[in-house]
Length: 314
Image 1: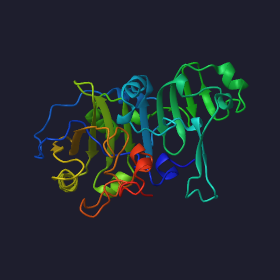
Image 2: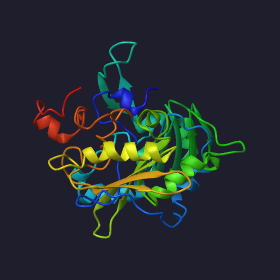
Image 3: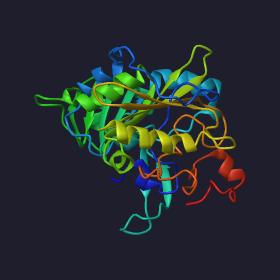
Image 4: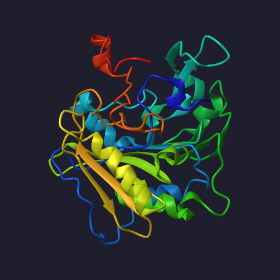
């Protein structure tokens, strides 16, 4: 199954660059920070097999549900919440280049739905690690009969993938470093392959709830050298210039075992700044901010009202 980004080629790219502090910051490089504490994401990585060459998406639905109930306009998650069985993606041709429709999946089809899931992890192209409360009898009696859900317990589902058989993703120091940089977040998107096109070894976006109760997003991009980190920071700072979408946001280079580029801002209920929208990435090819389109978002509610907006194109 294609990834969310490939399923909806015009929707903002799923993974890799957003950050957590807010517009109005400075852009100087930082000194060596203290070691980052262990992120709860590392506990999740212990449940995933090593690899992660494409996309890894994480969503804490227990936290997200009440947040969206208070202010849905701040959030722009895929309609299936990274749970691949929850939506049926239909294409008019075998190539799968153009999406025809997205149809919700009935609970009877799989025996569970998003309301049963507390934590969803999308792994690579179509794998899932799900934590929640599952009725194994209902799943066995469903039309799918639990096909592809192995192993399955009352609290964990592996779909299209297997649990780690020894080493796990938590044994990859790059993922641990970026996860610890993000901290404890309620959603995160990791990207290794496309990040390499942008002078980064691994990049991720994470979002947490700030002290004021509002979401704050953070980009962490691990670089192989200080030269690459400085060049990446230069490219990102072009997006924070006066009049740009991320005007005033902070961009720093942290001196760690490997340099970490960090960018942060507060999310807003407007096109390009909602939680789950990552307009900086451009499928990993950030390029120069002066020439790259700022965003391609066809899933945003503002695009329905203003389809001719320059950001609302496929």
